[in-house]
Structures are given as C-alpha cells and as structure tokens.
Length: 212
Image 1 (tube, rainbow, N blue to C red):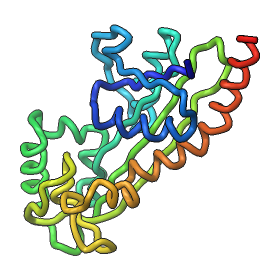
Image 2 (image 1 turned 45 degrees about the horizontal axis):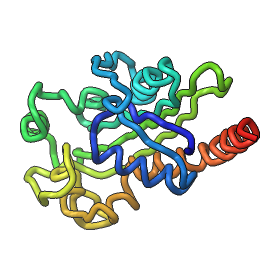
Image 3 (image 1 turned 120 degrees about the vertical axis):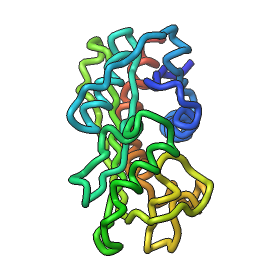
C-alpha cells in the first residue's frame, strides 16, 4: 500500500482532480475523502484568505493522523473591491445561479472596461506532527472579465460569466482539459505537484526502509 492522503472535501470532482495529480507523484498513493475516514462534522472556514481556509480544512485530517489536502478558491472582482472573494460559494446564500444573478446585479452599472476579475485558488497539505514536515502551500490565479450575460453550460460557479480574451470564450464554454491548462486551479495544482514531489519521494523511501 502507498501513502494515504485525505482530501478535506466530499466533492467528487475535486477528488478526481487531486487523484490524477497524486497518481503522477506516486502510483501507489491512496486518496481518501472525509467520509472515507468517518469524519461527519462541519469545518468552520473562518480564515481571512484562501490560503488560511485551505490550511484550516487540511488540518482536520492531519489531527486524525492523515496527510490532509484541501483547496479554497473563488472569484475576486476588481470593481467590487475583491468581492465575493472567500465568500464566493455563499455569496447570495443560494446556489450557483443565485450567486451569478447577485453578481450581475452588483455590476449592472459598471462599464464593460471596468469589469476585470480574477479567479484565485490556494491549495495546502498539512502533515501529522509525527512527520515533522511544515505545511506545503501553492497558489494560482487566472485573470478575465465578467460578461453581462451567460455563455456556455460547462464548468461550475461563475464560469458562464467569466470571459477570457486569450481564449475568446468563457470558462463555461471551455472543455475541462482546456480549462485545466489556463485556470487558477490548474496553475495551483501544477505548483503543488512540483512542491510535493520530493516530499512524497522521501516519505516513500522512509516507509520502504521501515518495512524492511
């Protein structure tokens, strides 16, 4: 058996995404979710930044003896002073459509040239104390602008409104593979994989020596 990691989420899309990264780092790595380890509680994300919230979530599996991994991401709109930011998922108190409608309402009087925004993503890995390894963190951003109407049905969150001049379309119109190449989460995951590679290699070496 390989090293066990726990993704501090029960989101299957995020789990599949992280599984692909860990498989590259270690073919034997096992990725579990919070429900897999029997954690049914709520994690209070009361950090002041994406990075803090990612660390808070990843710390939960770490206190239970697992290597915890978590991400926190959202949309930051220039004309709104960076909002909705860390509150992106709960901006309206409803679902994605409600959040998008609130965003469009808030930007209704903002000219096209002032609707710049960026998606941000922070990823953290937190290790149990026995490893003596400090948290690993990665961050990614992707700039674009907010349209006045929906375009595309792919992605999730604010993707149908987030337009990129470079691709000439919204995130809602991009294929998952194309989105991965340019997205905030894609950038953060690539940095995360680079930072985790030597750590995973060292942990596997240590584990192998202990089993001899």
